[in-house]
Image (cartoon, rainbow, N blue to C red; front, side, top):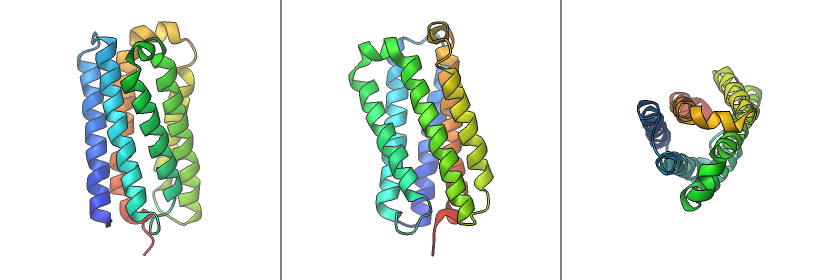
Length: 178
């Protein structure tokens, strides 16, 4: 897989995540099943794209193992969201918080690998990783009251994840070892 295809796939994942985030913001009264469906589909596509990019370019890309791990965990969590919607409606704040916490930590750790390899722009991933991890941590603080604000929170955080994917596309040329 070349850099252009990777960029297009990351932009596609980013745009889909941002669209899902905007839908959550526009329709905060959406049914929980609809919300978990939006979240599950967006996460599934994002995870699959990370796995495909790893499979096609892991020998040429710095920090590829973190993309694979993030993609696998995102796919597994998305399948859980899609196939266990009754349980998901009760635990969505916790599940979403776990995903954000892991995703933020993995981006944070990956940024230091990019720094070690001399990749310019690694600080963007550090900042975004910290932001995602902090928001994921705070989502555990009071999950009951969070149910009322979950649609807004999910919308904002899906947009952050979409921006992260688009940033990957913007900095993709820096990930590839030639």
